[in-house]
Image 1 (cartoon, helix red, strand yellow):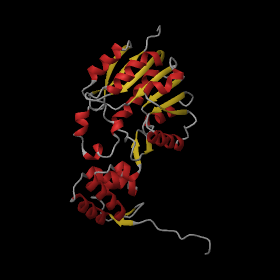
Image 2 (cartoon, helix red, strand yellow):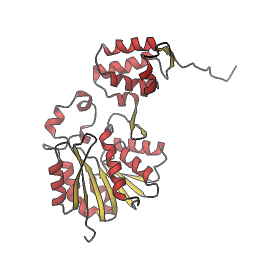
Image 3 (cartoon, rainbow, N blue to C red):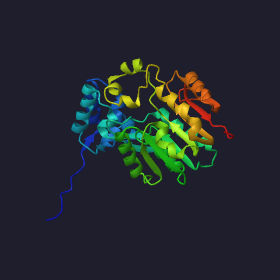
Length: 300
């Protein structure tokens, strides 16, 4: 009929054929887990469907895109070390699905714990004003905005590309009006709110420069160095954040910072030197001290 575009059927594949295709792709290298991830997030095959493949090879599976397209992305990942998240433009994080793109740090699983720590500190009482320093994709800002829908949020990044990505993710989840995005260097972008910030989270760059140079190519050659490395010992950004916290936080306000797996003692010492109180370390999912938390005294 005139005026109606033809309906294109989604591609389908037998389970046995998919298993054979999968074996062919893995012969070129890479991990089965990564290939499964690509099938999940680009071809829309569920984890359950992938697990049942060997048991039910006779099943007919419906894909969002042809396997040829998935194979092209897999080969780009294998030959050019492009992160899978950039290739599909999406990244699962907590209970969210975020949009990601080159030039912006890909959210990591361990950073999810910063949200839980912040919510535990609030003890059921939402802060009046909170901030996310170095927001990147906006993952922390979005999670806090969803948890504290009546609080004012501020998300800071020095990189305009990152702020554009954060804006997109906040807009998709209808939280852009709740969170104000600001471009600037750490606390300086928040100077009008100094002394009013009840909770501040930060996942700053913290990888020492020599370690950054030895990272896997998939990270070193594609993710922004600005969001990863921070001087010879990796503590340059954490020094700045610690030094400004007492002036920027509200009386009794909390600062939560993620750091490198071997920086706990140094990060805690920086917070103490800045005059903060209740300085404490918290572990990641593997039991490694990964987060430093401190509070501005109530009588400052």
